[in-house]
Image (cartoon, rainbow, N blue to C red; front, side, top):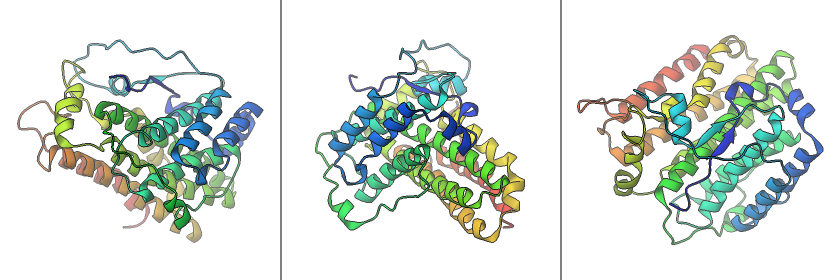
Length: 346
């Protein structure tokens, strides 16, 4: 298909910024200008105007690597590398890591806005602004701003002239949605890294902002999952699901193999002591964060149920008696949330 997105270059999750100070030190004048260009008046712009701003900002950044198609490697079962290959993700180790990180955010943002300004979507106005707000907040944070912008003003909703009658290309939207989701997960990892560092240094204002930003990013992740699966189950069965099955990919392809998500879960587990000792003001923000995290899993379950129903098998399993995909995701959700609830004394 002509609209299949090109390969997206991403940092390995362990190479993402580990503190707010590290971001400030790496933010060159070129990066700062690109961030400013992408954000200039963006909340009041139409989709096409926003797209023009994002593309102008991308021109001000050096291209991290030459995008190339992958050669599919034969494997007995899918793994993290297989998931990257399927999602058209190339992991890049680069000295100018902040340039690559900002470039990836803008590329994913461009894919989302381009798709929703050219093809039909069932996202509500609120969801559309919610996802744009997640991107904008991440970019503002990288630029040095410390304020989570409010997005629900009625005048913004009234200006969202973005709906179209043309149907999307399902596989293109599926892959673009995964780009958007994975980039936002990387933004979550970065904001949590900044929170942990700031909280340990007792920079409470910065740590509070980082928690609020993380919540906003998780809300964006929930919408990204909706966006990725925003087409009919019939179309999914005919043109998307087969691309996630042998011989197109190794057996067992699933979103739970995503290396960024795996890293995020490991990061949260290693910081149990931080969460156990939060001061009362931060605890309230943490509770909102946990709720947003849980909602992301619920969104994943809704997408899965939309396509395969409540009893359809998961691609993780290879036999006809496989456990239902929704049940698999529910178990994963409860497993991931267990550490949160232990930390919160529930």
